[in-house]
Amino acid sequence: MPEHVKEMSFFDHLEELRWRLFRTGVVILLFALLSFTFKGFVFDNIIFAPTYRNFIAYEYWCMFIQSIGVSKELCLGNLDFTIINTEMAGQFMVHIKIAMALGVIIAFPYLVWELWLFISPGLHIKEVKASRKAILGSAILFFIGILFGYYVLTPFSLDFLSKYNVSNIVANTFTLTNYISFISTLVLASGIMFQLPMAVFLLAKMEIITSRMMREYWRYALIICIILSAIITPPDVASMVMVTVPLFCLYLGSILIAKKVNP
Image 1 (cartoon, rainbow, N blue to C red):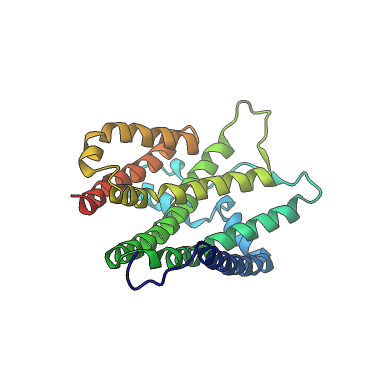
Image 2: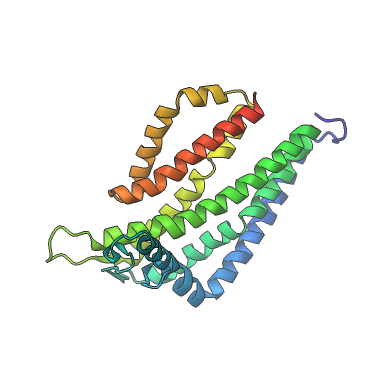
């Protein structure tokens, strides 16, 4: 243990952890209450925004394909489905779940900050500097992943699934809970996937993996990226490519991180 840190007993650590968890819970609850209060803005402008034809992701995608001379028929946004509620307390429970989820997402930097304050006293000066960068990078990558899932994965997935049908006599009518679960899974999975560089950083610090090992097994990594993309996206090539490419780029970037951490 570093010399500048006062030795604490096991119960002192538990007490400190308890108060840090309490403060984190309070912050999450405050953001959740704030999200709960502004119900109209949250649902109309965030949750259901990908169902609107003028959603920004659809407009930019259409502008892009037209700029490269591709047919306008490949534009997204002409969704063909309706959302219904089939449970008595369905809308109220969804309101609470979304408020809590947004509370966790918004409070994520504070959660990471409390975690760092808890573990930093047991680290050496060099380790403190490294962990500070890692935690900051983890928070930034998490939000980038959330935005990627919301603005890229969600629009492509909704467009494909809303138009897919096995017969013209079958109409697409999704329940509110099913829609919320689908969007949440895509967005949170994307945020978790973008933690790959931080995972590599920690594994390289523990000398479990090296940059040489990652270079040698890049083909297997590519296959794993394709499999993960196939699991979390609809079964169409465009969506798989949109996930596989950035995920594999994260892997390639992680090789540089592993090389810098453990030459």
